Length: 312
Ligand SMILES: [Mg+2]
Image (cartoon, rainbow, N blue to C red; front, side):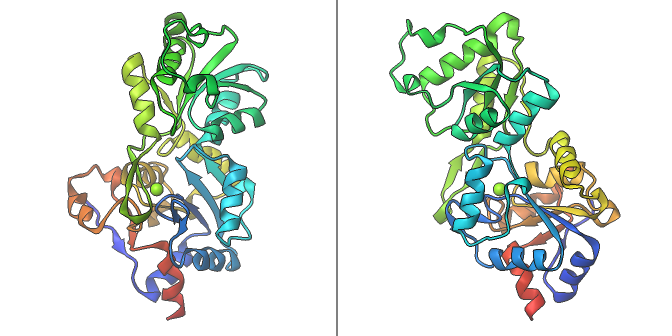
């Protein structure tokens, strides 16, 4: 297998800047850990933008809407990050409902997930049901009205939720089984966990999506990384040339596979792994056991280091 190149000299970074015009970033574990900015990242993004590089952010986290991402970036000191370069999977899910599945505007969509999904569905003209409805916060009740399928629901979107309970999974299951499992089942992502602040590992959306896949015994449409459909959408929206684009992320089976399968970077390689999130230094010993699609082209300790190599 081809081994990743560790980028740890000024020369390496200059080569990276020569070879790529566009940088796609994952967020959790790359830009921040929960609400805490990873050191150096703000300077690095500012530096790249000042160099005329284009950036976009693709997060498998579906809990926040694009507008909330903008506010988070702003709060952390980023002043040039606008809504049109942010792709959380709640947005990807809403786009899929509209553009791929062509479900008519005004339809209801059942949601198991946090309010980011509801917000992005609303933005695309849909009526989210389920989701944050307080009626679902109650103890399980076999006679509850919400266990009766609403015939106006045309699709189901499942993502991460901090309000996972039996009422929510039982109601969602009714929609997934309805009419011989014919309602489209969209899953926001496949991530098992994500890195929190202080070394904490937390359950991510993929654990919820896979729970529902198992109980309904049917497959879902994955709209998150490494979906090639999502990459095509981002490249098209942004006008990014595939050969001049690289994906920066901390997760091998989502971010790195996304860049590699998407054939980013032409012959130069399309994926840069950072060790500031879920993947740790000792995990690199296992790289040779993995499918080539999950082996990064480049490795850095953190993207926050990039600007320091230029300074020194
Ligand atoms: Mg991540």
